[in-house]
Image (tube, rainbow, N blue to C red):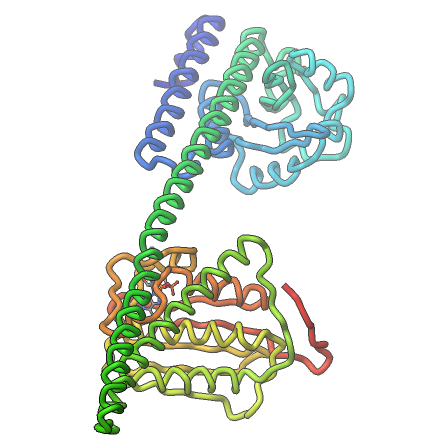
Length: 473
Ligand code: ADP
């Protein structure tokens, strides 16, 4: 427990300084323990402990054991000992804010003279009367003329400052303002501050290492899932293709026999149409997956190139919707276009088609067939916006943050029926993100679980002065 000012007056000064220091040590141990435990509860949650929050807690405790107007803890950063206030106590909020701004990134040499800095470098406390020995450049003294500045040394280097400020109301000069016990206490506090800074640094490193490890593990897990999904997804259409080609072969053999017997009918010819249709469907699916995988490896190798040309977004969207409608029997896809027949953009038309197609095929894949899908193209503020709205299961806020990552597939979202014939590698939205970002556009999803999703992207309209680019990444 902290001692109050009355009991401090009745206790001999050295003992009082010792008790204060002990109180501070106890309180500090409690802060860092709490923070370490907080880290255990949420392992890898980078990092709940920061120099700023610990510095502030430290300053508040130090102020309680010291009798002064305010205290401050400053870190000094290379290359020229730039100050950063990491905690202060005793000033009203607006003054504290000013102190923060006044000191932020200002080299120590702008504040105190070379002789004082030399003293600090040799681990000595400096006492300053700011009236007779003012700051090097004009600065606010925040109503307290007498300063005690104690160095915070870390591995023999001046890493920060612990400062105390007193007014001149009760004391004739700075030397009578600070008793030897107080000076010793301030020095002790500065040593503790050094330990705290070091410990925070170590904890931060540890939390970052933990978080990195967890991220690596999550990526490795997702990669393993991907490998097993990919091998399954690639094998399924191959098996179907093989089966259908064999079936077609058998039927051709039967046709040959019928031809030899002159009994060939249009009916029996049609019987080879069905396995061939199936083969083509699965072949397309396989091709889409292989193309996605190729694009993925191009991104990894930094060779994902957009071939941008002037093009009309109305045409792109219209074509994708028409094509999708052909392959989505039983589904109503509504298209809403702006009044203007041309929405000019500078883009890789094939890649932008892929994005619209991906949004649309996901909407088809994940929402009930009887629900319609809306595709909208709008123009506002020199920007074109494309939206694909479905009435499917929706996506939870947590999953919304991850669906754009490679190999991510939201748990619990099922593909519906035959529409599962589309690629399912968890790469589609990742590729969309890459494509739109390479066009300097934005993209996203608005979704509420149970109420469907609206996937969108926005691109700048082409200006008359825009030159076509041939190959731009
Ligand atoms: P996938 O090949 O698995 O469809 P995507 O990258 O296209 O990969 O999508 C990632 C995940 O986002 C999907 O696995 C699915 O869980 C979720 N998702 C995408 N679109 C929708 C949608 N319209 N409705 C609900 N979930 C969706």
